[in-house]
Every structure is written in structure tokens, then in C-alpha cells.
Image 1 (cartoon, rainbow, N blue to C red):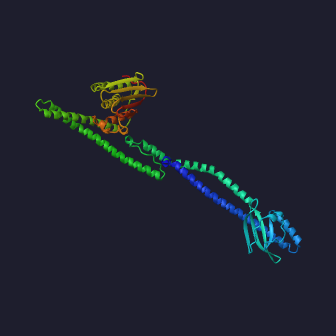
Image 2: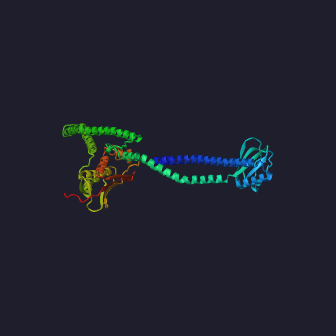
Image 3: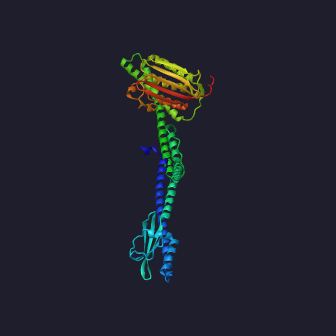
Length: 468
């Protein structure tokens, strides 16, 4: 669930930061091991050179007596390595007395007979030490030249290296993550542009296309593929629209002819009652079919004429009052009350076409009157503020279910069976939606079953209406 809420840019940033951190840890570990090995090698070289000088000193003192040789050994021990130098016999005894108190107290490792040299790592009282032991021959006797050096300096260098390494991680991780985020955002910016454009394309503007960045990458191929799909959809939708308009237009003639023939037959006083009832049904059904065809033609013309038409400044109050006057006889016939209230100045100026806006208000009133059983009420409220004018048509009728609300402005959509017994083509609210969009108005609806519906229109205001 969390993954679905994280953007690709953030996920790429997290992955980039994690990979960088892992790489930095591996790099730091490798550098730490390499530094440790280098320091240990340097410590070995130091001890090896010290034993070389000790061997050279012993060779130089071959003709000296034991006291003089010990004096030179003591001077050498104090001059190098803090006095940690010893010469052991094969049995572990000292060939010369310890040259210093430090050497005397030092925990020298046991002598192991064998040729060559041996490097040991031991724990002292204050710190670890490296001890180099090398076999040699002195006056025909096998001896072991031994020197020790503390490791504290090496450990201090390693500790400082670790401190510096870990101290730099947050800053470098922040820099790398920020860089990764900016790079990913830049790389995915075309995706945001494609997404925003795709959301704005609907059946009303299928001629528009997605932006294409000529980069030669996957995003360019995706945008080109989507644009090709939109072109095919546009052709198919235009063919459907053209077919609907042509079919509606061609059917008007036959329907008018059938209705005319039926009406002429009804004027004949000699037809029998059964035939008269049949002709009356034909007239009624052709009248209904004619209304559906007119609505279909209206929508077909609306689809074909998506460009802006000339709108004029008019008084919305006059539009609403005229539409309500047309609806009053129907409300009275159905035993419904129709009230109009004005919570605004007596004149509300909007841009529009008077007849088309009157049809919009009439559609909303007709819908409310159809689905409000007697004795019900339909209320129309006009209001305005400094920016918008609002027309609200509410009723206390059957209402619309929550599942149907998102679809009531779709063409030929009929709501649940409880409302299907009301006659209608399913095109009225679709026409109302088109008229509202044409006038840059926002048409919304809220409803509850068995409690009624509220349709609300919000218009942008304009200057004073043109004089008649």
C-alpha cells in the first residue's frame, strides 16, 4: 500500500541513496582495511630496519668486551623504540642484560626455534604491540634479535579515519539524494507533462495531442504511441458523431410523414374506435421519437460546433423568471408548488444566449417536476456575490442513488429502476451539461434517495446587460 503512494522520483531517490550508502560502506571498509594493512606493513618495515641496525652494531662491536657491547646495546635501545630491544638465546635467556626497564618488564613472546623471522601481535598493559623476532648468529651462538613497537599510533590513525568517514556520510548522503531527486525529477518531467495533458483530453477535445520530447528515448515512443491512439479514437468518435447526426436528420422526414398520416386519419369521422386508438398511439409515439431525435441533433450540433460562439451580456434573473413561468402550468397540473426566490440584486449580468440558457433552466425544472411526487415542492434560488452568480434548483422528490450520481450527465443514461418509469430520453441532463460548459458555468448535483436533489449552476459575472 505504501509503495503505491510513493512517487517514482522519491523511489528513485531512495534507491539512489541506498545504493550510494551501500557503495560508501563498501568503499570505506576497503579503504579502512587497506589503510590498516599499509600501517602494519610500515610498522614491520620499521622493526625490520631496527633489527638490521642492531645486527650492524653487533658486527661492529665484535672486538669489544662484554661491558662495552652492553653499553652500546643500551644506547641503541634508548635511541630507538623506547628501549624495547632484546637479544635472546635459543633457550629464552637473555644474551645481554635488558637494556632498559621497559624491556625488562615487557611481556616478550616465547622463543620458537627456527630459521627466518616471526612477527607477533601481543597485548601490552597499555596498548597492543608488534614484536619482530629474527634468528641470527653471534660469536658462533644462535641468538634471536627481538624488537617491539607500540600499535597505538596506528590505532589512532584508524580511529580518526573512521570518525572522518562516518562524519562525512550524512552530508554526502544528503548531497547525493538531493542530486538524485533533482535528476529524477528532470528526467521524469516529460511524464508529468504527458499526465497533465492526458487528463485534460476528453471526448470533447480529442483533437489535442500529448507533448512529445524528441529525445529518442522510451518517453518519446510512449507519447507517439498515445498520440497515434488518440488519432484513431478521434476518427472513430467523429464517425459515430457523424452517423448520429445523419441518422437523426434522415429519420425526421419519415417520422413527420408517419405522424402527419396518423393525424389525417384521426380526422376521418368514419374510422372505427380500434383504428382511432391505434392512430392516436402512433401520433403519441412519433411525437416522443421526434423529441429524442431533436435532442440527438442538438447534441450532434454541439459536438460539431465546439468553437466559441458570440455571447452577449444578459440578465440571468429574466432568464430564470421566464423559464419558471413556462413551468408553472405543469407544476399546477401535477399539484406541485414552484417557488422562486432572489437572494441578489434585481439584475444579475452574465454572458450567454438567452434562449439556450432558458432551455438549460427549463431542463433542470422539468427534471425536478418529473421526479417529485405530489404534493411536493420545487424551489429555485438565485444568488450572487462579487464574482459568481448561482442558480439552485432543488426538490423533495425521489432523489438519485449514490451509484448513479457520477453518470447522470451521460448520454442515454437512465438511473435505477425506481426512476425508470418516468418518460424521458436520457439526453436532457447531457444537453444541460453541454449548455453549462458552453457558458463557462459549473453544473453540479447533490442528492439523497427519497429526500430530493439539488442542482446548482455557477456563472461568472460580467458587466451590465445590453439594452433591448
